Length: 260
Image 1: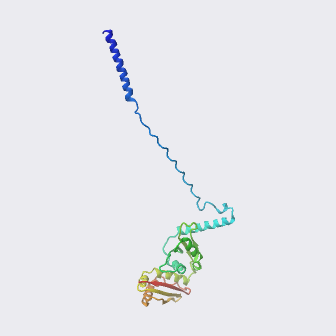
Image 2: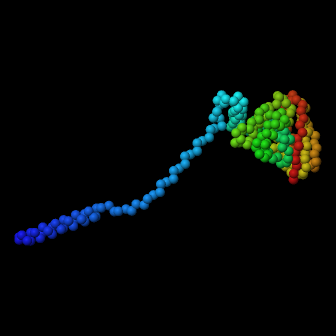
């Protein structure tokens, strides 16, 4: 081969090598990405520290003796209220309802009642009319309620509006206790409710009990047939809960409202 031809071949080979190198670099370079600046995120506010629970302090940790005594009473009230609320179970108790209902009707009169009452065993839950703090004060200060209540408990923290009343048991063989139970049955009886729907006005029953049994006198503004109908409905109730032997004499006024 001629020298000139060899030189031209070497030059062509060199050009091809340079071109190949350029293409390799070009194809393997990472693409140029345009970066957009991102605004920094706003820092999150730290969570608010939780407030201390109501019972975070004990009376021994309070320096002021008066405040320590006040805190001790609050803790006692809180424990009583929670135990009554958590233990409010079991069958309804007409006897307890009959004992607590008359003073509640005297405290908050009106028909239909603007308050609610449920009794289980000797414990009754009461929801009064209006603002809880106002009727709580009325319930705690009422002398009529105090006569039939062993304890009255409201939530000292104001979270739960319901009040609980532990009704007195009454003496053994107490005629008043028996009549209270009978009144509760009267007010819950569907037959008595049907009788009250026969007219308008009031029906007053003076119930009396002694060792000979139960008697009553009637009055009020409702038509006589309404009272007579209730007298018939009394028979099955007395058969279901006869007075115990050697019961102590007692009387009780029961006022019912008739409405057609």
